[in-house]
Length: 361
Length: 257
Image (cartoon, rainbow over the protein chains, first blue to last red):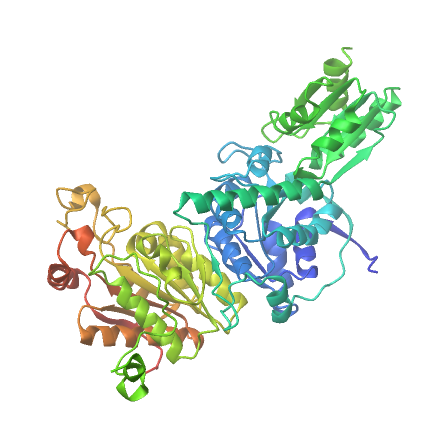
């Protein structure tokens, strides 16, 4: 076991963890607040050690299409960006979902709309959890709340992406990307061999051997009957993911009268808010969705039974709160608290929101 | 004469490449695509790369190229084929990786991906079908449309004041330091088909030898889009297209035969 503790930024942890989990390639374009990822990779020169390819692409559009190409050829390939860049990638992500190509996208979110701000935000929740591009599809979305989870979720994202032949996203933000914390990096795994790739990814386009039909990766089909069947296949796959891959964390929920529901950096801040409220004698718990899609709807509904209220704390104008309300379906009052434009809320603000919005103090 | 007599080796003077399957093509009679597909299949076989080739097809008339050649294929989003090919080749350097793109795909929506892949010197070959029109969507103006040429979106003829000028992207490619071979050919006569085959072969070999990026433009007919008969389309191409898009090698630093 590797127990060596290092001090890293969240962005740096992504770079280190990617190399260590046997990633084959990174394709990306610089954008604040995540440029340390490509900078760290360039400094570490993994092409000289593990053989991992690192390419600075001409745009986010090209980056995601390089991910499409490389992952379509069976490799563990990822890209990273921040909100405006991820908006540009939506074409490629939709094509990957339609062609069932596994790949990993890291979004270190910043505030919008448009060029917005370089300060942190969680306002890409809708884009991430609703597909984001054209068509009926979903991307598996993991929301880290620490530098440690940035490191841990790289391998998990690749595993899920390849298990379901679907794009997977790590939805982080400028807080997690920029802050430094202690982290234990994963053990160095070897990159997969050609033999392993052929076995694991019989669909990969790496040259047609005589024993099989050509592998064709496409999202196109002109016959609506076939296209509907393909869409139904995708929906069945998404149903399986909903069933099997929900992840979440609960802290002090059992005896709680009130719940805070928050993800990523907002959940980290809310942990402190919960402590402050408990210090005041209020029984507050924290429910943290780790997979934003699939959303832990059944689990949240179960835990919320009998509670007096739920405050959804986000760094946006109210996005995940919609999923919470759908899950709770009116059984418990649900309110939202958020800050916008790159303002990161103080733990005390969330406590005040609990008191004014939920406890009517 | 029985079927066996016909296909006995001594009677065989010509056959389609093994890699070409029997799927009926969707291309219009008179279109250049079919010939170029055949050349690519022949070259892959002659190079012995049947099991080591990955093609990237475009959006446009050749969107279904993957139906006709029995190799592995990825279908790219509009214009993005060189980005896909970049990654496939970087990750599988011993594979033959090529893109097959039309003028709308390559010279318009995919300009950035094309120029940057070529400029990085990716070890890929780009086959560029230039018929001066958007064929698949029904004959709209392309960046390569000639001045005065009528299309459904320039029905009074392409006017530089309104529509800008034809884009000679192959010439641009020849100025990039990442390219090792840039050539412009056609497939309207037996002689030109042989020359086009030689050019594509050189591009493929250059990519396998890691000499840089290659681009082979095939000046092509779109008789349906041009609203001409196949024979008239060939004439029009020779008379008008070859003046704007002059055939021959624009760059060759490969030292390959």
